[in-house]
Image (cartoon, rainbow, N blue to C red; front, side):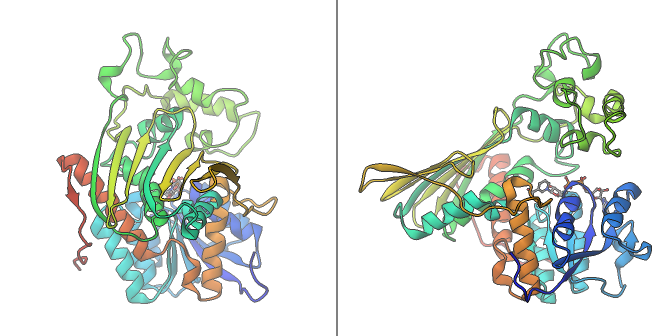
Length: 436
Ligand SMILES: NC(=O)c1ccc[n+]([C@@H]2O[C@H](COP(=O)([O-])OP(=O)(O)OC[C@H]3O[C@@H](n4cnc5c(N)ncnc54)[C@H](O)[C@@H]3O)[C@@H](O)[C@H]2O)c1
């Protein structure tokens, strides 16, 4: 992992929710490489949970990033894990104060704000790593290696599917944080900025010249509500048979404080109390609402088509309606074909020369017992690379830097523009500079 010469990197965590907790765990896993020295979070119990784990002194526990404005620099890096709409302001502020940034995706929810972040980092000479975890996910990195080696020749087409999973979609995009575009952002940006980024990454920097997209909210709306359904799942006569019932998603045995339950109810974990409090919470919480009666408006089904400068094509399907929560990919080339089922062992390559399939596994593995292991280990490799980059002053160790991430975010905005304005032949232009 880290070299002997890797110095200790200090960090401030802004947003101590699910992701902030996950990344800061690297400091518990490798205390000689990362030390959390300050926390920023309006919810006291979250602020104190991370603050206590890392022995953050009381004077370094803040409620809002604005409290840090003009203060002396407390750490080398800022880990920004606030919600999507609250990325730009802390990112620009912290870059201005000289912090290197580990910034959750999406960078921001408008093109202009994404540009402002990249420019602030460039202006202040700080490193930026956007949390495009898939670039660090061992099978995705292995696929990149295979493509770059020329094993399947020149890439001709990519078919990539993001299977969000029917109950996961209901949790996050119908009832939860990413359900409403006005409150957070559109689902292609929230969920598939990763996939657009990955397609671009796999294509080895070939520029996209044309993009188009179709999609809509097909299912989770009032007109699809069954006749007998009521507004809340716990009192609904259909709760046993409805696949999206909160009862089936959150209260199946054993009821434990694990994602997604921990998002609904994040009280301290006590097996004697947790199931009862969770049930009570669902009586009134947004997570107990009928999926056909929420204030959601984001697409549950969307496709994007890409045309690259060399004539290669790609498409991306985002669907809520899948059993699995995995990505599937098929890539064709002039000398062979590659398929991937989303798992670490699941890459298969066919050679047109030998007429044989071979299976390839991703070799990188996360060390045993580390706490930072989400997204199949990708979270670990992301933080590991970023912390190394800062310790060694070597931005080349970051696979998801500002400029490329900005480029791939722009593709997502273009795709959404195409969907909304019915532009089926949407030329992609270079991003225009941000206005001050
Ligand atoms: N990289 C990935 O694959 C991935 C996966 C899931 C989520 N995300 C992204 O990570 C981000 C965080 O998601 P999450 O699930 O951790 O959300 P969360 O709601 O659990 O955490 C966000 C936290 O920010 C806090 N906050 C609000 N205002 C603040 C302020 N002024 N200063 C400091 N903190 C403030 C909230 O109280 C909350 O605790 C989102 O942008 C999300 O889209 C990325």
